[in-house]
Image (cartoon, rainbow, N blue to C red; front, side):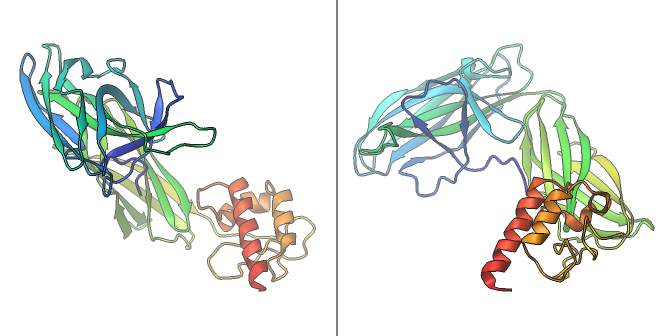
Length: 354
């Protein structure tokens, strides 16, 4: 699983009362949209003092005439994976001021297409990858409104990249962390320390036991990283870590250079040493054989009493030193998320009459 992807068009819903300079957007597929745009990304490789041209088309697939407006904006990736929109020429590495395009506003009758001509003029100082975007405004649909009568409109973001070579391409792994054990989950921190956009980057994780025997490996989907940006790649697996022992987790990232970058972290799984919690007479038990101990009071049933005991004694050593037995959320921590998940298990168990 990947926290950050840049596939397809980006469609945005905005409200007419908004005037903020920073707007979060969400990713959707372009299939079935009433405005068809021929390209979701424009890549340029014009050299300094050079000019390169490209084009894309916009087609009206609605049954009514549309008034289309195209604007240049800046964008950047937030650490949490969102794409943020800014006014043109305000973000470091922006190429918005280098771009000319025509037309900027036009009407489209049903079924009509319009070609947008784009020219990239690169200054002599440019080295590496720069970026901007076209924001295509589609007017609010008739009758489309939200609570309070606020009209909404749809906008499409077409990302633009300009890369001037030669430029340094380099990256490094900043962390390898185990997030959960049932199944094993690993997060890799990767930083693009160079000056060019990295595309089709691949990460692979390998698990070995203390004898060096490989127990399994798993790979990420391809991803991209802007220069100077860092990403966290969350990689779940189908490996369940039930056997106590010492293990080695190795992460390797291939970003197309002549060499790979790697990082490692050791993992020790200790045997469980469960004992009664609080006033309980019995140690917790695993009712369904999944190596998660949901029967907190050990009475052989899943009830509200288990939830109350777990919530009250969340920080007890019997729980903290046996964290993998109670990590229902599989994130490597025992916290409110695990309490909420246990509550859900009990609720489902009660409804089913078990």
